[in-house]
Length: 477
Ligand code: TRP
Image 1 (cartoon, rainbow, N blue to C red):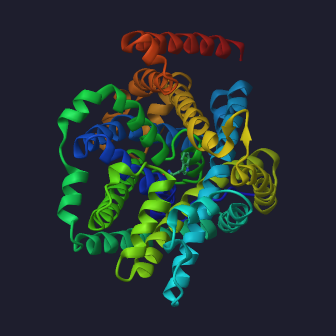
Image 2 (cartoon, rainbow, N blue to C red):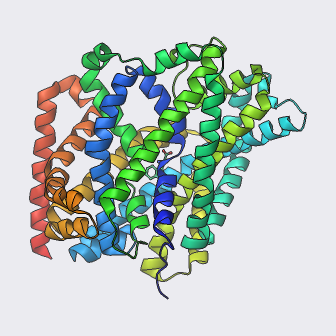
């Protein structure tokens, strides 16, 4: 059976942008920005998107388009090494971890969307009355399990329908809808009293905060950039493996990063005016679930036509989350199809069954060894896996593919972007892995005990050890 490909160029861009645009943009980005110095943080973040995100995206694209297989097959075939193929399985595991918690959150959102839509029909949305308590009841347990299954089912349906008729068609509808609704909501929010104050808060250029926290801000900014661009899980490898024509990867990657950033900025332009117009101080609401499901949900209850606004808003979030979750499910599915020759339909059934269980555990959210499973998976586990995952792709591109990566980068690219190929390879092979290892170490608080420069040194040493290991591994092949 021939491998499916995207029908159109826009199809690939929208699918990848759909993967990127998700919960990361809507519930995390505005708060992280506001907490870390407003538009000055935005500058640091944009710098990281440009210097780490886009090169990282291109790393995954180059592996995917050259390899034309799932991450497992691509890494193995391009290197000729079984060890790299084995590392590819790591991405399949990461993807399962991701979708396990993501589909639980997706379930919450579906529920809020449903409640809001019922509100349109005249009923008062149940979460309007006591948002905090309502969320407490919805977040975990059997209810959460039910909605998790529903969201997972929707995701599975799209993936089941295939690359063209499912993912491409779906994201071609979802992405424009997300953009249009968000712009509409942002314009409307701008007419609310308090909007000016909200903009001042959100986009204030607070250089002092950034300067004071520069190194503290780097790791969260990098983590956010990775998550929001869907890097480190092999999603972009998989999507790029369905490209069948030579077009400019640097151009496509830039468009995707710009679209993704735009949605994050727009989300802030919706969320903050709403909170400010009701006198809620956003810096008092923690980022994450509480901000969206308690702070904002509570705000809707007090707005004129609150149910309508809430329906539009949660509609945006459902679509954004769905176009991301399908990209997560596609990784293990493409793995089973490419490696074991399963039909897409059987592969979807198999993977979905597995996620019913793993996601089910996140939905029920038991505490294991003193740690709540959901928070662990959604936080440290996924952060670590993604950083390690992207680091490995970049090392692969820099040290295993080398010239081939440059050729793939240039293929279809215009003169200007083709000239960036060599600097890109150097960044991918050396600077970025060290930077990412550094952020990994700070995530574990190593810098707090060792100090900044010793941590950088440890990152460099770890990089050197990995490099030597890699050389040895290659000579074994
Ligand atoms: N980027 C998505 C978001 O911001 C989440 C996502 C989809 C993702 N696919 C991924 C994150 C792969 C990491 C890896 O919500």
